[in-house]
Length: 157
Image 1 (cartoon, rainbow, N blue to C red):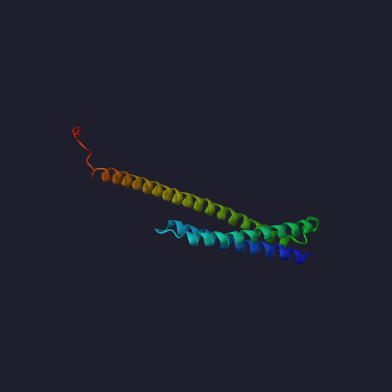
Image 2: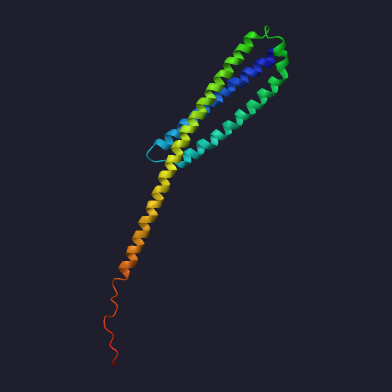
């Protein structure tokens, strides 16, 4: 039983470590979109790495839940015997929860930054298209200005 509890504890510690890595990637994404020149390649790389880390968290959660469900009856029956380990697990679960909330807050802030960036880019594209249209219309009107239509029609020939 002690081995199972150690495995649960290691799983939670690993999850904390992965959440720390996700926070680091979130910080990189934030810096990318707060800089003057946005490098979308850096953003894509961070998203890809975060995807791998999220998969790790999912696997850790599945393993934890599976192991906990098989150990839960024994823990409930002998709470006094495993008080110290249970307390440690509770503390780790609390830390994981807090870090998870922190990651979600970072994600929400980054989402707002990304949306603002793409709105700005769309606006710039729209302005560019309008400027191109104005220039093209000007060019068309000026190219027609060279030719002077006949003013008089001489029909006596």
